Image (cartoon, rainbow, N blue to C red):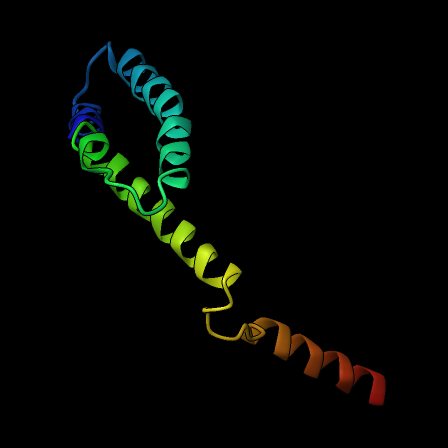
Length: 102
C-alpha cells in the first residue's frame, strides 16, 4: 500500500509534498521495469515468492504482464481466437468507401 498511502498523504497541505511526490515517482520508475521484466520472464513458473514482496499496485501490474505473456504464448501456439478488426477500423473503411463513391 506504499503508493496508495503516499498519494493520500499528498492531499494534506505540507511543505514536503513535492519531496514525497518525487520519492513516489522515483520508486515507481525504479521498480516498474523490474516488475514488468519479471512478469514477462516467468512463464509457467511459481511467482508467489516474487509477488508477495510487491505493493498492491505492483501486483496488479505484474498480473497484467502475466496475462499479456499468457495471451502471447497462446497466440504463438495458434491457440488464440481469431483476430478481428476493431470497430474504429471498420467504420473508417466505410467512411473512406463513402468518400470514394461521392
